[in-house]
Length: 389
Image (cartoon, rainbow, N blue to C red; front, side, top):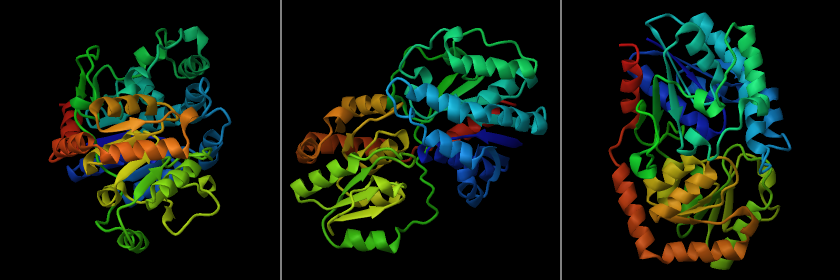
């Protein structure tokens, strides 16, 4: 069977679909991933076919848009400048390659082109939610006539012979056939989800094909006590205070630290030997050797902290991160600092409290044990296969 997977965004957005693609390929299916050009080598290196639905320049333009992290404008900006441009290329690819009874499409809620194909061609579609927030986005959708994205999507629909979307986008975008959540029920208690929505667990894939850390990382870990880990995620480009506060907190606590970010302009210019900078390290390999994770609240990073049994300290910045931070705190495995309150002394105090709490440490171990043996990818694969049976 041919599986078409659609994905765009940060590593936390893309890696679960790559992991799912790998599992589907292992089960004998032909898998093509539709994504951003900057993920081409990562996807091809995983043994999957790749098709670009968004060029490198378009993605960079969206990533560097001045409103991408604006409190009120960030979500419309993301949708209009990253997701919308991929809509027609997604629809066109599916329309060209879809074979009735032998093709399934899998994608996130923003895979608007996949929903077009489902409506126009009858393509079987499964929507994958990576975080609880993805279902409602924490807010009611404005009336259709009040959204620029709604107008843009209806313009495309008119070109391909579809009627305008007459309901709020949040009520339309998920597949009416099947929704799968890649997170466990204990992370998300929802009473208003539809009957065709199922929860599995975290995908727990970070792109690592090796079971060993790089030599430079291993050498730093071997030089002293377990370090603190600080990261803003893989696609953050506009954060210039997070690592300054991280450095201040590390020095105040007398702790070693690892800073992770793909865009080096976010780091302080001078760092002591007790702090090491890396662009990317597989968290599944790194976190078991560390004390605590201080991060942005992305769901992929969050799941690895759960698995490693580490306390979380979250500094939510955008999108689902605020909701994830609240859930982590309610589970008793971490705390959060709002961006406007973020400074080294506050971070240091919260780290000290989390590391010194036996209650928190015990709760972290309990959740790590709950995740052992769970296989969300196999479970999701079976659900996908059942759509056309």
